[in-house]
Image (cartoon, rainbow, N blue to C red; front, top):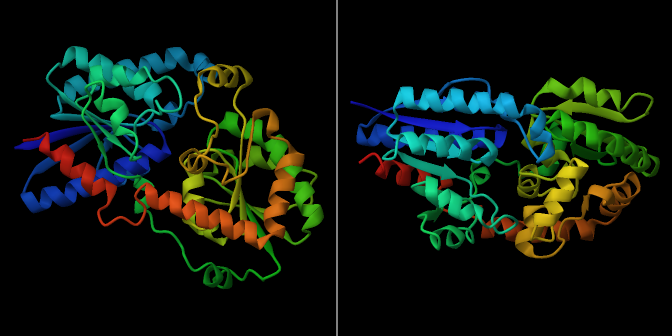
Length: 384
């Protein structure tokens, strides 16, 4: 007998989580002779693990409040299409990963149509940051919530949603630890300063960040003429767009999708706020975080937000371990000053790396059991 599991991920970070989860479920199923079929929505990583995806998840790469409005009707159509497909597949378990703007809406509709279906969500909405009322909404839809952070379960268990902390899935990636050897292998001289830049994976992010980032990079280059800039992209989709903002500059720059290797190679990073900041910290690379939202989206978020910082390292540490420049503070002058300060001061670089390492350990990095294994074992109990 074949048991069907339907998994939905809406963006690259979710695709990674989904792929590690499928891999661990497959490992356990082979040991217990369970026959499982994976269907749903996923990117190349999930598909490489055997998932049959309904459509390309690039269509779901949405963020913010106002940014979603122009795509509302398209999103509504994709939700309808997904719900119909889930009902048609008739899985034993539905798993949704992050992307609440899509996954929660799908799960709600499916719950109404299949009241007995086991529905599990991975990555808790940040109710500790804003809109705490979302915890009750999740409790009305889901059978179980798997969280990435140790302090999250109580926010949901108190409203009746069983929740389990499994750890952060990006701890399962293989990080490069020998920076000197890596630089030697790539023929990078000691005097060369490597600055890696993550401008964003969405077109809107790049359009907002690059006018500021390009000016900041030129200021940094005036202090460090031997600066080499490497833009880290998930794919080459927006490389041409980034290059438009670099025309007329004398920057020595290149592009790479070999993310973790470049993170480890870099002396310092200019990082947009997001999961990449944890990966940089795990690569022992100091950074400056910058981010700009659509102005109206930011105004809404500022009214709702309950935390002081944007990056998770700072939020957990309850202090500015990593310099942050958000919205109106995100200027070429402030960003370049902070990066030059890190490049000039080895003590500050080491202090940031050391403090970040402690935060990473507190959310499961270096733990004995992989988050995907913990999650897989729990999910498979719902098949019995």
